[in-house]
Amino acid sequence: MTHLKNVLQKAQWLSIVLGLSLIFTLSSCSSSGGDDDDGGNNNNPGNTSEATVADNNKKDVSLASAEGTKQAVTGSSLPTGVSAESDLNEALKDLAVNVLEQVESLSNLPTGYSGTITGDCGGSANYNAVINGQQVNRIEYDFNQYCSSSYTLDGNMTIYYTYSGNDISGYRIVYDNVTYSGPNYNETINMTITCNATYSCTYSSSTTGSDGRTYTVSDSSVTGNNSSGYNVTATVTDPDHGTITITATNITICDNGNIGSGEIEVTDSTGAVVLSITFPNCSEMVVTYNGVATTYNQ
Image (cartoon, rainbow, N blue to C red; front, side, top):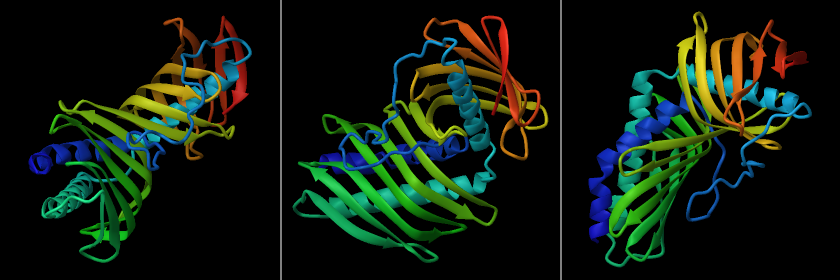
């Protein structure tokens, strides 16, 4: 069972990855899940080719850009404290290692191994380890008001393992409507994190916009605050028109959740900035394309 001992030796790595994932939860969230072995996203993101902005889609692309910016900013300012992140990070690591240790103790590896773990302060986490030969393909968790320390988890999380020979070469961690709540926070995590052996991770998130369409946000970076203004870079996938890159500066968020000030520049398949969006108030945005400014509702 060299492979399982190797998994256990990677517990510190798993801790780092889970910690990164929870920190990134503070900057974006994605919906994914299901039984596919590679942990792929079952929610169809729509058109994933590079978008080309034109006069007939500039409104849609602008809405996608604004929604993606709001999603990144809102996530980055969640009220989860560092201590809560650390507690949750350790608990998720312990859950994963607990299951792996149980699997390692088996004399004959089955194709699946299921059980229940009880929370320190109530609730439970049902788990199912899917095994292929001498390797654990994935561990699926179903949290049922699982309580540990100062927080409670509810929802589904799956950790997918990839291997190079007998060594783990990466993880894919999928949060599917996981509610993470505590004394001063109550957030729902929908996110996929994929990390390789050097801890290099990519993230994917989705949000439903004011127009009812679902946008995917990835590779986002957020700095600043609502007083000085947020600066955001991200890739946004418009489900109908494809992917764009956004660079937002001096963004502030209004009480109604819309953007109140700042500017977003949009880069499309041409590799150039083709669209700019400014926000004169908390309900409108001014979109400039080919030198022509048009005002739309957010």
